[in-house]
Length: 101
Image (tube, rainbow, N blue to C red; front, side, top):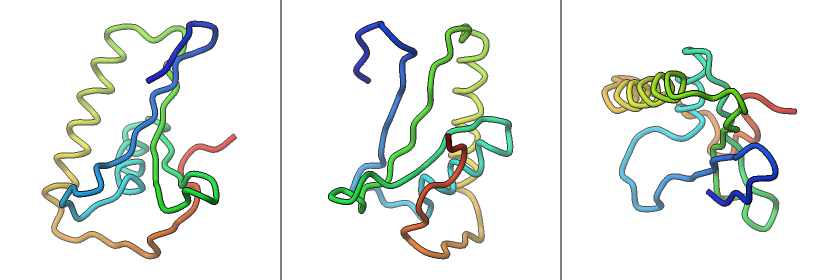
């Protein structure tokens, strides 16, 4: 996270390239959306379009309780994906998914 303090902080991340999981950040975005969190996953621009990232904006009114609830829901979403019996991946390059402006 890079933040100079002028605007709302944005946290952006990608999955490790060598991570051995059966789910994607698109799947994680879907799990979080079921809990009411809008955390979009999308590919980077053309020259890096094979890199999928996920990002969330830390709103000005973000307090400890909400951050703790998000962390709990994120852990639960990852747990659900790790223990899912059936996962469906249509197209690896799904484009933008989740909340868009």
